[in-house]
Length: 334
Ligand code: NAP
Figure 1: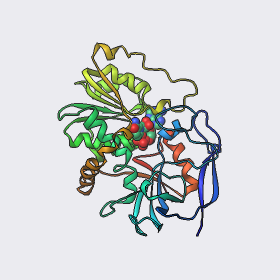
Figure 2: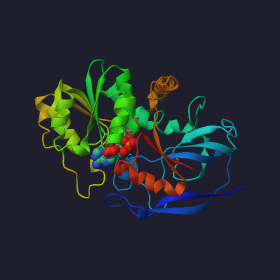
Figure 3: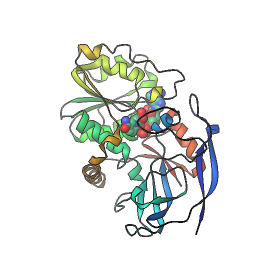
Figure 4: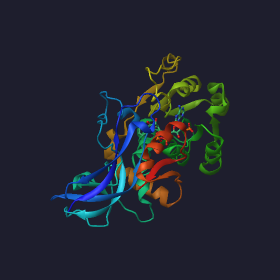
């Protein structure tokens, strides 16, 4: 039996901020399910900033997207046909074939997820790669300790809001940076961070950070790069640890983004700068899933989502990431 479905293809490689013209909604027929395979109806898909890098044809830690082929990325769905004894019809699974409504997968490329008390789409956010990124960055790379001060940028997003919440649970003082008053209010009043900077309202980011963190910062969790990284270098304490997670301020730059003008401070202050690629740490998923599921069930980590409806809205959801359109995890409900 074959299945008709719809998927989003990359039609052209964008320059600058992507527009809808780079994407095409395509109807296709899937091959029948063979032995060892499952047919999944996707219910939620993730859009993530790293996908912008995959739209450029260059060598990186992950292959570029092909033109005129379905994009991919994390998604969750329900098994509708199974020729793999490890999966039953109705199982909820997470996998990497997003940007489409149905997919036929080898059973080995899907993972069954527990949905008792946890919404399936959480496996794309706090219980998925964004959550793992926050956990690894804080616990393994920064080795965060109670009493320290952390600065986190893009702090109301999927990774940043998880960093802020885990850091509070670990007993740190959290200074957050965001791009709107609503996001600042959410972080202060509901997430419970100690200070927030709205970078869009500051002409002197380093000055604002020095005011928000008079004791300096011990850890910088960088999701943004650019001026945020310069401000963090200026205010860092000696021997601070910088988790270089993302530099979204430069992802749409049409010529190479410039590095921080004050990088020499990394020498003077003996700062430890370490890059992080979450997929290097998948072996930590069992430990992370157990800890994070408990925090979520106990209400210690709060979940926030911005939801677009329908596969055709996926390009807008993705483009919205670069305009600050999301609070919490940006998701598409299919
Ligand atoms: P997200 O924070 O949920 O969404 C992106 C947010 O970035 C936007 O909501 C916006 O919030 C902010 N932003 C966009 N353009 C900006 C700019 N020019 N300057 C400052 N802020 C800007 O996305 P996410 O999935 O959690 O990812 C956050 C960062 O982590 C990204 O840089 C991503 O590439 C990185 N990441 C890295 C790894 C890894 O393994 N290294 C894994 C996951 C994510 P505002 O309204 O606050 O501007």
